[in-house]
Amino acid sequence: MTDERRHERSGMVETQLRARGVADERVLAAMAEVPRHWFLDDPSSADAYADRPLPIGERQTISQPYMVASMTELLGLTGAERVLEIGTGSGYQTAILSRLAAEVFTVERIATLSGRARAVLARLPATNVRLRVGDGTAGWPEEAPFDAVLVTAATPGVPPALLDQLADPGVLVAPVGDRIVQDLVRIRRERGRDRRETFFRCVFVPLVGADGFPEDS
Image (cartoon, rainbow, N blue to C red):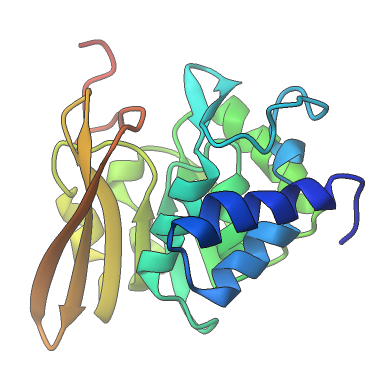
């Protein structure tokens, strides 16, 4: 893929990602390849490759590039995995995952966002992605188990359904906390045991659903 803003992505990778410790070369290559500006309401935005989240409508955001890369790196993808993403949003994180895994299943509760993401993912193209509109806290049970699960919205606790749908071995990454601030958590499952690790503080929009936050609180 080529476009006029490749040099901006290269700069993003070097100054925002590699310089801050992101070391997985497959993740860095995917971040250098996927045009983040395509996933914004204003593709010409001068802020498209800025080191911060940006609004995408519906009170949602496209995550900071460093956060996308860090969460993806924590999954440790090799290319053979089936990945469940909770919170499609703009579809940018989905596009990164599509270059690093065999299949990506992504769930978004807001139909307009899912529709927009579908159009951009088709343009890339990302042919190994399946999208669904629904409650992300319920996961995608008929396609389980998943080798990796990535939750891209703040959750008060890891939804039980997502743990039920995680393979053994498998890995789940999610921002866990309240509506104000969260801890980035990774759960590694191996031989029937789950090991939980906490990394750094982060701030995400809330995961709304039966096992997430209520919509109006």
